[in-house]
Each structure stands twice: as structure tokens, then as C-alpha cells.
Image (cartoon, rainbow, N blue to C red):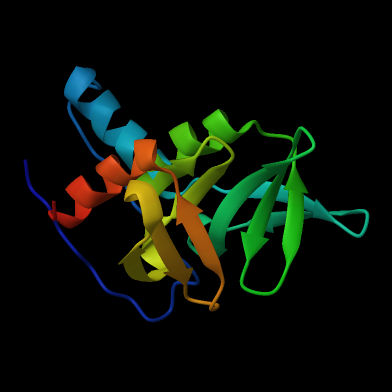
Length: 146
């Protein structure tokens, strides 16, 4: 397999072209991974539907059976279930923090131990989130700490 990177300041966005003799299982897997990197979310705010980039989302939270996406300054309601967000965005470092929250770990500024084996996360916007004991184990493994 040959891999080439060609930079061109005249193109408006990244373009990826896969050329192959035949589209086998390996190529299908590669294409699926590439598509995962370009996943977008939709969220409603003030009656308008917004297209959101996963890297702009700090976390997702459920309140009264509704799921909300929290960006640095805005909050959007999404029709997706929390488990769907977790599955779709796992490749973007989204991890479960509690039964009602999924966190973008790339947007965590600091992690601090809390009472009863929980963790306290400080997000890049200064907001603090608690990680339940059940999910703290997974995050500690990600950080390679005990």
C-alpha cells in the first residue's frame, strides 16, 4: 500500500481519495475509519438546526429524558440517545462519565480525585463535571494511573 500526502493551499477543504484495484474488506474497513473522522452532529437551538463538529462539543448530558450537547458557550438539544453519541464519537475520544453524561476527553483540562473513588473533571471552559466510580476506572486506565 502506498500512502501519499499532497499539500495544496488552493483547495478549500481536505480531500481524501482511495484508489485500489478492488474494494475488499480491508478497503471497506479503511473507508469506515475515514468516515468516522468526519462525523457531524446536529443540535437544535432557538428553533434552528445547527451542524456541530464533535471537537467543539465539551460533553453530552441527559436532563428529563432529553439529550443536550454542551459547547464552550452554547447548549444544543439533539434527537440522539446518549448511547448513540457515545458509539458514534468513541473515535473522537468521547468517554462515558456517568449514566447521564458522555465527555469529550480531548476537551478536559484537568482530572482530580474526588470522594468515594469518583473523579472531578475540569473542562476547558472551566466547568467541572463528576465522573462516577463505575466510569472512573475506565478513565484512569486511559490516563494509565491507578
